[in-house]
Length: 576
Image 1 (cartoon, one colour):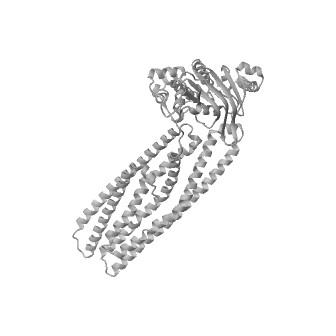
Image 2 (cartoon, helix red, strand yellow):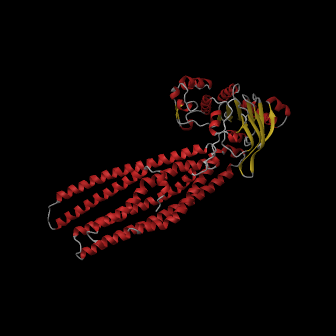
Image 3 (cartoon, one colour):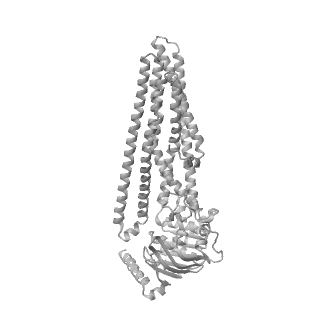
């Protein structure tokens, strides 16, 4: 019953902790039985005014309490070690799987689902290994042990108790089929809601631009309502099944007590035997009842494990042998087409030539496909059509390792990790000296600020929440400079930051373009003025190309966008 062999074999390290957990629970039960029988015999002697053995009973009870306390601590320790093994093993497997899937993993599984199964999904399995599995085996062992002990007192009463115990797992089995289907729907709706939320959050700016935020808000409300309803169904199912198990447990214990009382009234058993059966009757059902209480969490864990294994079983892309030519870093894009969804093409036959050691800009309004081109060049979106060659080698044949070694990508929301400035910078070059780190910080105009703080040991909060937008982008640029690759892609890297930081970053981009192949993606045309060549996109199609002055002379889309932006910026300056 809910024993997933693949899951248990995957986390083989947990088996010894589960066995230890069961052993200490069983030892705790034995000590409790010894205490009950000792007290029962003492009471029987007291009835006959025989006070001998009281000291022995007290010692036995004290020893039983100590044993049970030690067993309780050991049980908690084994549960923790089992849970720790599960979390470490599964999360490591998920992490390694994502590395093998590469940066294009989002084409097979959503980021929100990965986060949900690796965080909450694994947490659900913590209960499965730490509580459910040990309780499952103990619940099988405990009634048999009690029956063996109490059958020497009264076979009839012990048999009544033993016969009633399977009614609890029978009730669980009846609920299991309904619960499995229901929890599968619950997790499906849970991940769907997560997908909707993350997609809307990441695309909030675009939704605002196209005035689709109200529509998406209504869609998310519908998804939330579906999740609320399925959650209430799960809770109702859990409450009903718990009620049934309680009735069986208390009813079975009552039947055992009645049988023991009947045997005592007939003189078939003595007072001590009757007392022991009454006191231990509940222990027949408590392990199975506790198993039932873990059942629903374990079922949730089973539903989560299905999604974990679905992720782990995803087909992995073939490892490409190709490498970017170390002597040529020019990029040639011919008739490139791309679709996120079937029958909805995003890029329509785009042709772009990017010479080696040049400064190329890709411009256009938001939603025209600029960032999609960057994602394709970084290998995140592989299902493109047409041809993309880097140094003469087709992009689809280049290994992801070679792409990462030769191309540095800086976006408007480059992620900075919680830790020190030094730790974040060393991700760009693990072998960099402190002197080198300070040099790039000088280049990006961050050195003075960090000197007033704690230098390279200045702490960075989660997502660099303790830095301004400009400081965050300059630190991301410093890390990118340390990576020192022949190709750099700046994807809206100067968006939403102060003018001073924008100017500092653009200064470094112009400096890089002297010796590197630099691609600047920007909706703000003022940043593209100095580019050797500017490609202008509109709704996924290439409309114009040329230098800034050449494009203005054409009096086309570029000039229109330029004039509009200049008017807006001049209005802002006049307002100041």
